Length: 186
Ligand code: AR6
Image (cartoon, rainbow, N blue to C red; front, side):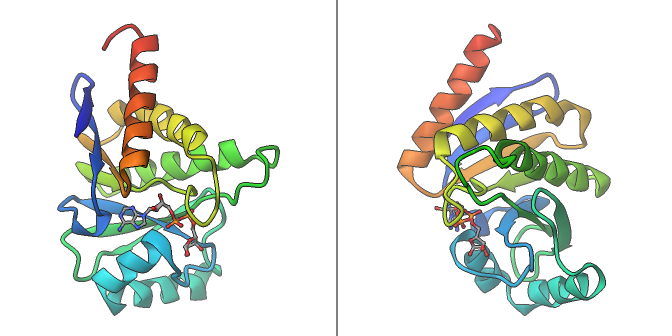
């Protein structure tokens, strides 16, 4: 595990499985129809059970789904977390179709929704870097800088990044070092 402390909060980078997290909210890397799928989305629905999809169905009936860059919240069903925040990352298409801005919006909007529910802890996966092919080095920089900019203005006292491979864990850890070194306050 690797961590960086702010005045009243902490950002942690952890190698693990997000479905096992005991936090107020976990974030799902969903698709815009909220229909479930593979990767972390499939794992969360499998482990959390049908209650999560039942709430996704209701959201789909009202709003049609969730646009890229935005986020919606449901129960976490049988998981140990209280909520699942479903956000839809951009599909990587070379980087000139607003992919970086949209990925930053995913983190920003997930943090905002967690704050609205007064969550104190939240766990993120590496959004868009699996099936949606966003380069992980660029994604890590966007994820960590967006959270670092927002954490202290929110109700969150702990933000956790749960990386599913050693390679991604190392990359996020290295990126956090770079960001905090360049701020000169590590
Ligand atoms: N815990 C933490 N991270 C995980 C887990 C887990 N249990 N399982 C996978 N990952 P992806 P995307 C990592 O493809 O790129 C789905 O079908 C995985 O190793 O899950 O945003 C949706 O329905 C990778 O590093 O999400 C969408 O259609 C990261 O999670 C689409 O894929 C994200 O990979 C979304 O694609």
